Length: 296
Image (tube, rainbow, N blue to C red; front, side, top):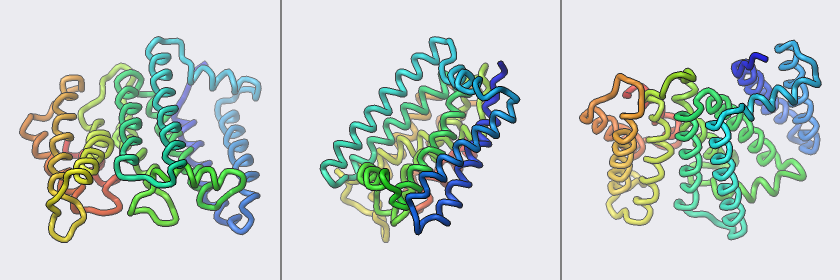
């Protein structure tokens, strides 16, 4: 059976968009959003079945073959991803029980998302591309359920996602969604063929958003004393980000497809990305990977 991830991504994204739009119309009666979710998911599956021209009974087997491809790389990758997800869930539960989160707490998820992405693009880039889109769709659906306080999920999701909330969020919690998009964006823009290694620009998101931003926040929060004029960001945090971005790219470039950027250009790129993180608010998680993508 030929497996086409492209159709699955398109249908999942379209279904998610429809869920967001129609859930807004049902915001006065959030309980009905549960039914909407069921209808949207069922409709997406029907469209996918018709697109593939397979029987309904074949769909579970088809999905099983997508996920559990018989290869050691896939089994190792899935095992590692499950450990990362379980660690994230456990950490989120612990923090939600505490009732508050700090900058350091929030950056734990940068670590797990970065590990998932890096392992994926080097071991199974095509499957990682699919999973990246699906994770974004799932988190958008979670946010819809949380935002509209849809019973019985709303309160639980609100408590769990407390750990993600930072000063840039208001009633809509976009931080976890922007984190996923930021890390995976270069892969979304340029999918990697199965027989190829990633290019250095595929690491733009994970280096700047996943690793660099985390180092900037942790170092700036714990050790920062000198702030940029008129900004909340510290000079120490910016330096930490520049160093971490450079080190990440420098250590990774020997594993990437040519052409490879020079050491001097990596330093310049790290400095530019760090400056953007220091002086741009709200959209830095989306802007950083785009700028890094074109720089590298």
